[in-house]
Length: 253
Length: 223
Image (cartoon, rainbow over all chains, first blue to last red; front, top):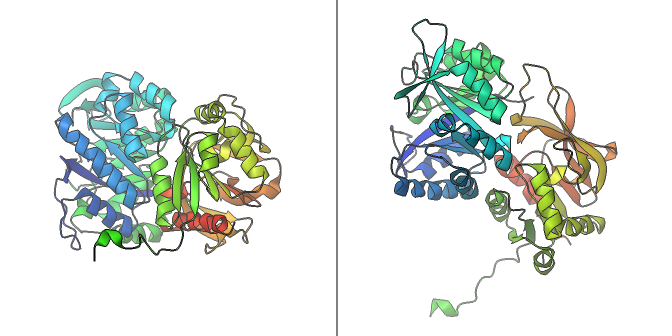
């Protein structure tokens, strides 16, 4: 049976993990490769690096991080942040990434999704959507640039369009819930997941293990992304899987 | 004593494995996995390079579009190398598209494959809520449990990482080495003699995946 995936996400700036990671077993919690190894050892199903570096010079450092991780961790690795062209994507895939995540660049230039999917296959093109609930409470607006700029796009409509263009997976972040620990936006996740034929990774709001179970069950998500609950050692990946397994969610042991 | 004068190394000889570069990405994970299990990978781009690599085994990895993968093999002439390698029962491992390329034809753009094995590559046709691509960790059951590729692995229940929208349907069911369930059983791996291929990515499947590479290198090392 296909397992639901548990995916830790590491924010990387100029080659260092930011937002704080406090693994007890790590001497240098800022080293992304060491963090990746720790999650590999814990049995994470995939790993996502989000490159939040502003300058393109520092972005080159990300290639080295990806290459070093791919040499040591035999698990799927997605890289997102700052990829604007097919050439940017190719460089990252050749460094060792299995998938790339496109956000602002895909909204500015939707053809990038089609071009990249045509060249590298839909399986490695993830479209990341940052969505915020509208005042009507019934719909969600898409934002770009790390959630700073509103667009005219409706999250569900954009997800559909992205899949038509060639997205093989949607990484869906609720801006309302991100960083709150109040749980994922179940309605948003279910709305998008039911609207598209490809897997949806739910992101934003995980505070407890029950939140993971809720979004996989009621939100119809194929995978969950979480950062803080794993980075700070609140829960290990193994604890999360044991919890989900007891509740009948198929997970890889 | 000058360290440069010491004998280079006393390690046992590493099994050399040629890895075909079709110009599509992600060879690195495959070569690193081979190194991790003690083999010596050599990336080859032409039949000449493949011939001169002195390799005991040949690996055909592949991600992306099957059309590009097969076109690249034809253009370089490595399609003939692959066919001949398998005909002579030399150790071969295809991964993902490297498995799909071995069949007669694919629904993916109507691509004609290398036709080493009669059969079709078809798209998953599954109703909602099944998602396509089939993406993530799924368990397999070995239909050839005594295959050297399955050595050290449980007959049923080992999880491997899959990411694909198309799957192989061999005409000869005897070719099926492992099956997986996703809205019904499909072929997760094939094996005949010393030719093996997996739909899943062993190089992305942590310890169990490395076991697959290790098993293949064992087979190659016995030649």
